[in-house]
Length: 489
Image (cartoon, rainbow, N blue to C red; front, side, top):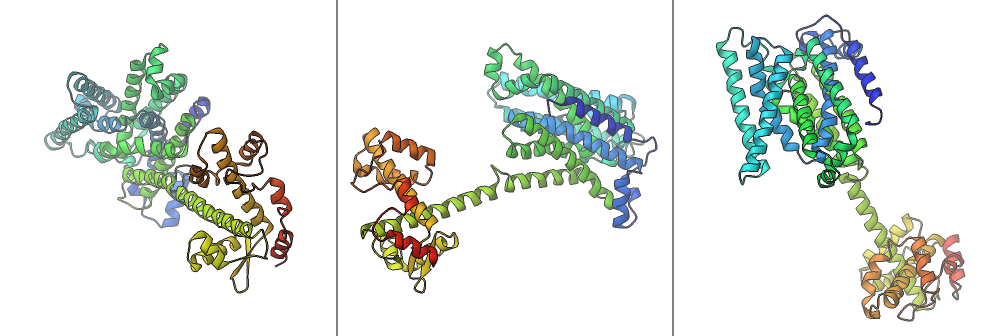
């Protein structure tokens, strides 16, 4: 994302060109038809209020996704929440400046209040024993209380206060966004994209390693306050759509979703912007379908759905996929332990006979007959063994035999390696080998064989199966017939 700023800027310009000159008071006024007609009407973008709401929501998603990513990686999520509440007195003061909802006056007042709140947080943490979270909570509550008082005063005492639209900044109403609001949001978003693009490396270093950045000569505090300034601007332009109460959610939730899906900051920023844009668009679409549905809360719900998806199905950190990997790994380990036990039973009788009975396997594994049956059935499902004599006789398939040899080889090579290279007593190496045998790769095993000079026996004098033994059936008496029987049956 940060390497292709011109594409993003071009996209923002195209969005502005979509905006018309006519206006409507609210999206809800346009939603008195059937569901299908509503969908077509929304997608056609014929209504100016829909265009303004959608454009504003998309710009909000771009800005919040980009800046929210840096807030999340810097562990300043609570700062975003504090700023979103601290700007409310500035919004009220901006309205009182000329008794109108002037976007520029409100922007200046809100940004001033937000920066003042961040300064108070710094002063409290630097001059007292209080921690940053305590200072943030105090500033959040204090500034928000002052803002509520000012908004109430405007609504109750000034002429036309209830119709001024100042109350929309509390909970948001994207339908109230007009052309001036969209233009202001576009200017702020373009400026933020340019600044974060030009100084991406500096923000990257100061976010992950401020100590190194300071030693390298970067003005870490300057970049911190620039980020706070951009964050304040982002909060202010988002108030009209989602309100003071929910703007922090649009800052944090898309970035948190992207954080679960990527380990690279530029990818995280790109994903967060995409999630923010789609969340804004979905919020507008849902609120358009029926009169009275709020836009801001549905934006947050959409962003939360993206987070739930990343939380559950993320390729690396998803809860369900991690559970599935753990379960699959546990099942694979049990199958391999069963294969090893079958090999050991065959080895104990010099590979004579045409299979291993469930009783022999259960005694070797110290399990019940039923548990041994379940494990043998798992081998059969994975085509590692076949069952005969009403399921009481287990015969390894060629793949099962090769895997059994590989597990035994891994186990005994590791025991020998610990004994020779790490001076482990031979009677202390078994438990470690039980764990490592399931994760050794073929390349590591070959290195162990070379380092151990292709040893034939482990520390206990038991033969170590070689790769040729696994591929040729081990060369043991009667074993070729055993493999052939398992293959043909």
